Structure formats: C-alpha cells, structure tokens
Amino acid sequence: MRTGTSPNEQRDRMNANVIRRITGATALLGAVCQLIELPLYFVYSGAPPDSNILTRSLFGLFGLVGLTFYVVFMTGIGHLVSELGPQYRWLGTLTSTAGLMWLAVAFVGMGLEVGAVIQSPVDIDPTIAVSGTYILYGTISKLLMGLFLFAFATSVRLTRILPTWTPWSAYVLALVNWTFIPSMFFGNTPAHFYAANGWGTTATTGGILMLWLLVVGITLLRQPSLTPVDSAQPQPA
Image (cartoon, one colour):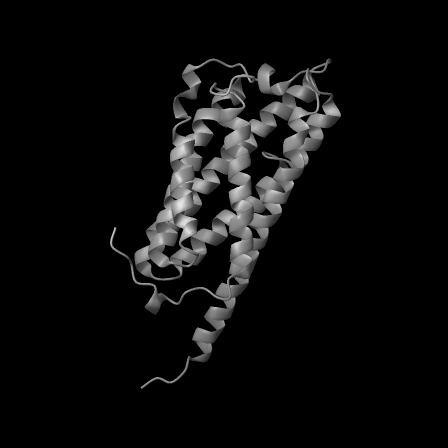
C-alpha cells in the first residue's frame, strides 16, 4: 500500500502550483491594466488627443500590456486543466484556444485603432472613425469571449479546481456576451447601448469581464493547491 508520494509526483505538484500562481498573477495584472485604461475612454466628449489613445492602447482594455498578461493566463489555465488527466485535455485545449483567438482579435483591433491615429493629421475618435473595429470589438469578440467562458466554465465544473461560483458565473457571462452577437445589425453609434460599437457591447461587457478575471486571478493565487486528478472525478453533465 502506498503511504506517500514519489519524488516525481512531488515535483509535478510543485510545478503545477508554480503555474497556478503565474496564471493567477497574470489574470490579476491584466485586469489591473484594464481598470487603469477604461476611464480614459470617457475623459473627452469629442475626439481625444493622440496621447490619450496611445496611453490607453498601451495599458488598457485591448492594450499591449493587458493582452500580453492574458496570453500567459490563457495558456496557463488550459495547461492546469489538461494536466489533471487525459479526459480533460480537449477541454483545456479548447479553453486556451478560444481565449487566445479572442486576444488575437483584440490585438488586430488595437493595431487598426492606433495605426489610424498615427496616420491622421488631425485628432480622431477611433471608436467611430475606424470602421474595421466595429465587428472586431463587437460581434466577433462577443462570440469568442462567450466560447472561452463556456469552455472555462465546463472545465472548472468537471475538474473542480476552483470554487463552485466560478463556473456558474462564467456560464452567465458567456450567455451575456452571446446576447450581443446580433449587435452588428443595430448601427454604429457608440452612445447607443446595443450597437456594433455601442457602450453596452464594448465597454460594459468588457468592464464586467475584467472584474470577473480580477476575482478569478485572486482566487487562483489564494488556492492552496490544485485538486489532484484522483479526487477530481467528472460530475454528471
């Protein structure tokens, strides 16, 4: 009868805990960057100066720093799920892939915005002037964000590596994001709540997601250890 764990098992457990802490820290740091950036969208009533746009792109909701942190988070959470057993690898891969695709769309949208601002000889509001971002930040992002949240929720519900509130809140957020998929049919006025680039479609759903990721990051950091695979049996769907 086994009375302890082998050195290899102990090393694997330590590695998993290091990855868990890195995953939680990057979720937390990415959310902090987003919270710094979001108010910058509402400082000016008209076209903001280039300095405002470049600053929020560097630190913000779709900014370089926040997105880079989230790349680490997305790969980390998928790895943690996959390592709990071969039966979870597909879900872990789907979670990471959906999250990384959403980040790729965000990188492209940010590049279009900043590029237009650099090129324009006058101040412009890229949320209106750059039409290519309407569907990127709207319908496409909502579709991919919802897929990531749904895959994340299912992974966590089956593996139980996080508290019960985590998967069920992710399911709710997935449904909220998916309700904004048809927003592409409702114009391009940012002042409207439900529009391709409306404040509900972009700022509200993005703000809720950043707060949720902030709490998920803190939860991962406070989690003493991951649930071992032999005690994380799948629950009935």
